[in-house]
Amino acid sequence: MAEKKRKVRGREAALSRDQIVAAAIDLLDRGGEAGLTFKALAERLATGPGAIYNHIASKTDLVAAAADAIVADVQRGRLETADAEDALRNFALGMFDAIDAHPWVGGALMRVPGQPPLLRILEAVGQDIRALGVPAEGEWASAMAVFNYIVGVGGQNAANAQLARAQALDRTEVLTSLAHTWSSLDPVEYPFAQSIGTQLRTHDDRADFLAGINFIVIGIVASIRAT
Amino acid sequence: MAEKKRKVRGREAALSRDQIVAAAIDLLDRGGEAGLTFKALAERLATGPGAIYNHIASKTDLVAAAADAIVADVQRGRLETADAEDALRNFALGMFDAIDAHPWVGGALMRVPGQPPLLRILEAVGQDIRALGVPAEGEWASAMAVFNYIVGVGGQNAANAQLARAQALDRTEVLTSLAHTWSSLDPVEYPFAQSIGTQLRTHDDRADFLAGINFIVIGIVASIRAT
DNA sequence: ACCTGAACACCGTTCAAGT
DNA sequence: ACCTGAACACCGTTCAAGT
Image (cartoon, rainbow over all chains, first blue to last red):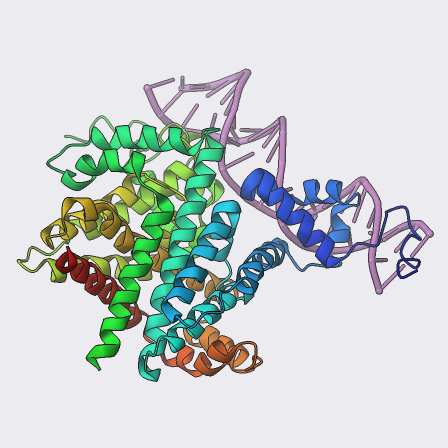
């Protein structure tokens, strides 16, 4: 009954913004940033490229909406807990896992400054920072530190995933190849990278991410005590 | 005498990779990521687009080389000091200032995982982490935390600069407009962002960046003591 | 009001032809 | 060995014509 009005045209239902965003997410998940083209999108939606512009303003707008849908999911899954540190860690790991599952989100966040998806992240982080007891004058700097770290790691992960895809290799192969290159570096010019090459192959991205969050949280908590 | 062999053709000197990279940096500085096209580059170098491919493999290769030149400059300017914390802060600020002066570098670093420019950053950070006295098993996580933070902030700054350029606005105008949007948010759904809107307009990016570095350094130093 | 799809103005890259 | 520049295979976006 509710959908009676819809099936008037050749297509199953009228084109909607949500439908376009969903198709865009699917294309991005399958083919990365290069996988989303208006040609592929129009084909998938059984329409012409021009029709899409009746619902979105530009490709940038579309990618922002796609990234926003992913981030909104993480936001909805936030932990209701008495421990602010746990809540912050939980949200940060939620973002990490979401970007791990949808690597293009990491790159997308880098191209939409101040827009809804980033606003959601800052909001979640900011609420936890407040719950942590950070005084008003330290809120901004504390929230930005965590925010920048989350987005920064996301961007790196996106870059790694894109590189692996472009070379048609998996993560292990890319890391093994990179570790070999690093280990072959001149130990005088690159003492750290040369010696750390083997750790590159065996490290756990998620654990490293959490370790960084913890460093920042420790720093923030210590700064509260110092005031 | 040394250049006798060169001026045999119509152009002043033969095309070289360094010359191409220098021209690319200039175009990127003037017009951002969109300013670097093979058409503009060929015009600037008084040649055809095809000639450039005799010296570089692709546009990705060229942007990586351009970013590497900027990062190499920061690396060369590293502080020789007894205080490892100062050295780390100094290098991090050097990267911040370089990306502030050449915003496209922030975006470029996000597209060249494991490549020379990022390797230089990790190496500089890693050396300072070692000098800080971090035990071997904590080196990787500590260095990655600082590295990810530096690159993450760089990416955000690049995005902000690109947005301002695209809208033909300056930083203050963009921030004022964004602050207004944030302040108009629903205080129930976005209590943090809504209340922090005014700080967005008056904040100091460089000071915030340094505050974040300090949080991480405090966390790392505390973790050394805990072992 | 929305869809259609050809056309437009680009883009990075290739390559046969030159020197 | 390197340069030249037309040609190629794309791309996002526009718009007159339809319904």
